[in-house]
Image (cartoon, rainbow, N blue to C red; front, side, top):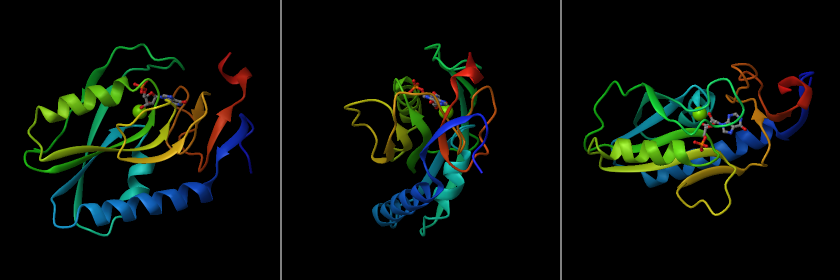
Length: 176
Ligand code: IMP
Ligand code: MG
């Protein structure tokens, strides 16, 4: 049943499942024979990461970073901080950053530059949702997203709604 705070569902459980299977297959083909590490960006991309990894059929590992740029608001502050850093070396490894959503693109731009200083063999991005027109930095992309504040499937508003199995738009009265 639809959560009472959700105005509309924009991406269904079935659509997520199909798209993630497709991305997992593409990664499995592209990275055969390479040492692959996923870097999952906490907290929003944990659910995407968990589902994506299970669609990848080649050996791989995972590490986590936490970046803060939003706080508990629906608008980016523009200021990026590393809250949790990598726990393993990525030197000479093939990195795929796993992110929930690209909005302004600042977070991913910062992360790519940061990770490149650690001498990986390569850095690519798997991002589930993209709000930005003309963005071409995402090697693996799930869906174009509407310019609305989205929640569910890892995405939160003030730490809530991450557990919804679909992606939806919140009712305005919830964040007003
Ligand atoms: P960017 O740096 O502006 O690209 O922002 C990316 C980050 O903002 C994502 O990792 C999310 O945590 C957050 N974000 C952007 N749009 C939304 C949204 O619609 N719902 C929830 N979080 C969002
Ligand atoms: Mg995020």
